[in-house]
Image (cartoon, rainbow, N blue to C red; front, top):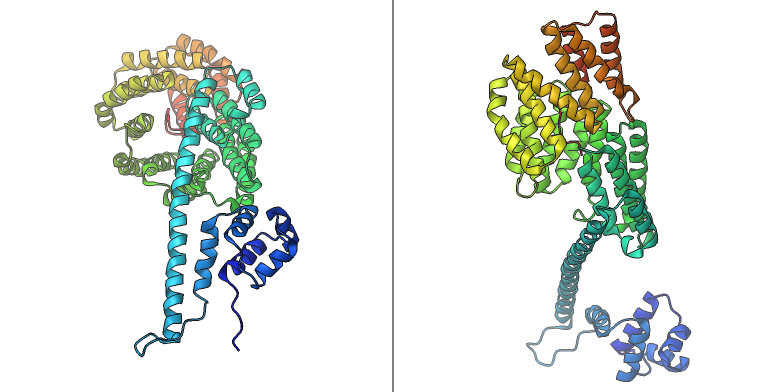
Length: 489
């Protein structure tokens, strides 16, 4: 006599129970059934009634669709019926049909599940980011202390979406306000520490925002601190690998892109270019333009101005000014700045009006000042000394008011070249005194202090020359970035 085959419902109850690691006693207690009755059901000695099946699935925390999935898999292993007519499929053929149908059914279930899960992830992420935008609007105009207090006390501010938003806002602030960039990055890290979620996901989130903290430390001229923060960021990121974040949620290419900026500041050109190449391979197409823009800045610092211009022209069709007007401004600005560095003043002057128009549209004061700075350099290159002097003098005053030490030092050195060429020693001494504040400013990099020390000492000894001032300015520009480059994130 062939063995009795238990009902598929009985087998499905056993499979679901064991998938949760429960004993029969635990399931029977939760479902409100006698232990002996559950044992008979699982042994196939008695099929569960619809009421019993409803109680068991509810206790297991699943629905009819979960049972259906188990039944679908069992169908492929069930014995095929014997043929009823000479033309019916043989049991072997019926078995193949069932196995194929089951495989197709399971693959369809898996595909549908992936599609629905992906759709829900995208929708939920969009909703979380919209909520973060509303939270940021409430935080934006508050003092830093008040922002920190809200994050510490109010759970509504402790979300992954707000941590992400604060990190991105830190990157946006980096070009103009290093202090604000650092404050926002530290706040992003704190929000990530407080945000709920599985441990692997929280590690991933914390690693991601820590990379933005490293970036803020870089623009604050704390390169050792930035280096340590990046090491920590990658450690946390790798510890959270099992969270399986996709490229649209905390994308790894962003960490590569930010680290490239640090390697550029450390003058590790090959490392910076390698990181940017890896970032470009992983980044969505709409972000390739910004990565190319950063690559061009590395090439300039390497002394390859022509190569930088070529990369900028490659980036141009990939930059959408409507989506990111600041990126378009950075592209145009850097193109003109590189033409100036190559002394191609006629080409630079032809493109300058568009840069000025974009700067006015953005309304960011440092961008407007840097655009005026470019015009002064073009005037100087074309021999219009009075116009160049007026531009540099205004730029120096604006950068001093904004406490942008590096920019003020470089503009002051360029202005000193004009004074020295005209043999105006009184103006040189006045200029040297106007730059003294930089020595007491916070976060001034070593290259800037070194250049100003040489300049001030040569002024005091009355040995300063236009050639010395020009060389100091050139060294300072190469040490940091293309002159006045606003793309610093």
